[in-house]
Image (tube, rainbow, N blue to C red; front, side, top):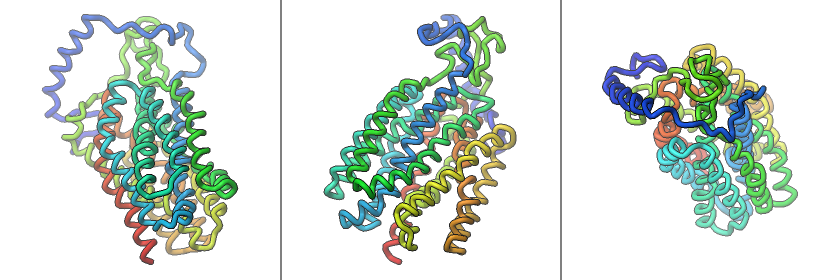
Length: 424
């Protein structure tokens, strides 16, 4: 999107609008699809249902953060030392999982847009929980690779990331970044849970801790999947809780239109500069942050910290980052998201440099203060700015198409860092 602002359609997409108008006219002639009245109440609830979608997504993100994103760093040394594997061998498994996620992302995104978030969340929770339970039986590298890549990461890819994100994008417009910020608090909560997870590993061993993780994902995640709803219009709502009559509709039931947004098809989006800019920004972020999340605990252990103390630093990083997720998201709803993202990236870089240059407790403190809130603050802004540019209709598919672009950097991160750890 070279000179275009968010929401502007380039000239080469104008021809597609005519066809869309014709399709829309025939659709209107047939009349709107009846709402699902069994779900819709004529009296509007005090709390907009979109916020229940956000809270459910928050809990699902917490599960993903506790046991997958942050949790694998907690498990890392215990598995490596017990089974006698190298850091590179274990890091390669995590990289393969990310390759799988990148390969499947476009298809998974299409399924989310086609069949809705709820079904994909349920599938993802079931697969991921089963994968963690089976990981507890690991005896060989091949077994670990198969289970982690196809079940654990398969479940995360299917429904514990993009599916809740797509639902929240659909339910909000003016407060979209803030809603994503609240949902992404789940990742911070997941990081905070790294400390009790370390206690469980030390008390029960890593195998039993993996079984515990899988069972927890099932017990918490399966009921929450039924709270997720994909689009507010299907249930008589509009984004942000706006009433249909405020937008020219008829009463409490659908007939009004959602806020006017420019909607791009996946193919139209891929022809814009904005698509590739967001994808590369996504890629650069995950190259760094994925490596930090995975290797922070092993690095601190090598500097003399116990597993519990190192996990405490990780939990503190997540805790300090919690205000950043909502604070920078709130700023993103009020100011240019591009400027807010650039500010966050700059402070992340300074925080990492300070951690390595200063060393000791001073370096850790410098890192926590500068890196944690800005690292957390970028996460809700990326899907929000994507929706600003390309709309809601194909959100998950477009994000899925961006993911393989980011995967190359995500894969290289753990391998490069693990190789440096083994060689130095």
